[in-house]
Image 1: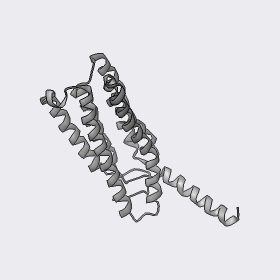
Image 2: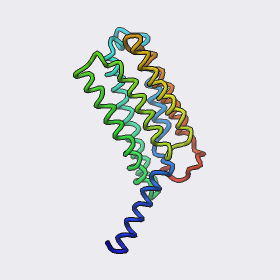
Image 3: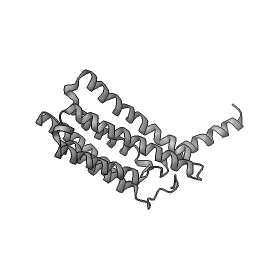
Image 4: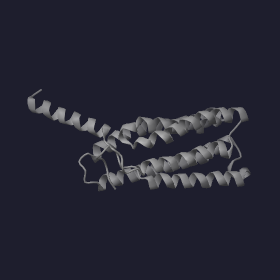
Length: 207
């Protein structure tokens, strides 16, 4: 390898390291807050009309799964648009760095419930807890590029997901509050964390 090629490779490594440790501002708190509002609406619908929207654990998984999928698409689309609008040469590498954390978790979040609904529907009550712990995993894994207070919603989803598994198991199934409260509070907490523009990590994608 020539010295020029070595220099180019070193520059690429430096850019990758910077992308993995610089504040990423591609996630919009407004989009996450909207998911929190939709979560609140769904929880209230399941409380008021349980026969229609909370008939079984499988129905819980399908309804909340659709919300999770729509939320992921909304957040991803917003992040891509904000990245394209940014005049920062680090924007694209930082988006790719964020995707390396989010995409595997999203695949797990989709594959697990599909397999459970297809082959073990009676175990559907474990899915919301798994979703919440996956969100926690993404939050903690993204700490280097997120505001420091992202640890609070990360901790919330970890604790609520763990508690939800035990509560659902003890009650013999899911309830609107066991499923809804963690998602409502957690998404509003993430929106609050993302709204922190005074982070000591400078750089990143700006709106």
